[in-house]
Image 1 (cartoon, rainbow, N blue to C red):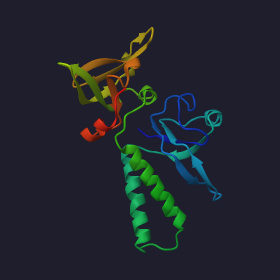
Image 2: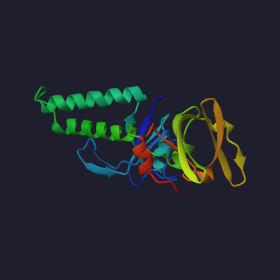
Image 3: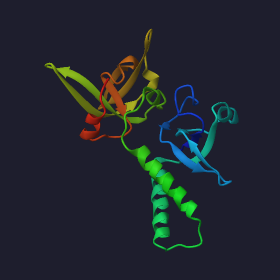
Length: 207
């Protein structure tokens, strides 16, 4: 899947503040430099699997940040960017602007941070596409003790069941389908962007 990235110029990427359908939301605040040399602060980035229209960009006050590419492409870009930065500081390349390599470093660091496991917000779960893979953590009470399980899962929105007070998110994992109520998110179930360590799971409290 290829993605298109956009800077959130005036507010954090929050529900109602960005177009629907984002495939990734990164709340990392950045300092960017435009082509005129002006340094500005942005509140985060959002990725889509399509190019947004000019109206969407204008209405939500976004700025195009470039094509993200596939996950493998982005990893290759990180490796390339870090390699060039190392070559620059090792004196292996000359005749380039320091700001160019500094910007490459910032992009690489932001991407690496975005790939670290994190608990998804409900808005991010809503934005998942069919067959997107997440790590599903469920909290159970057994013999008076709370136990959390973790397993890979496939999100399937087309099987969601509307209810009067919300809807259920459907996730298939290990050949089984489970229905998880929106209102119980972070109470007894939550999704991670990638597989977390036990320490990372314990560090994020449930509601």
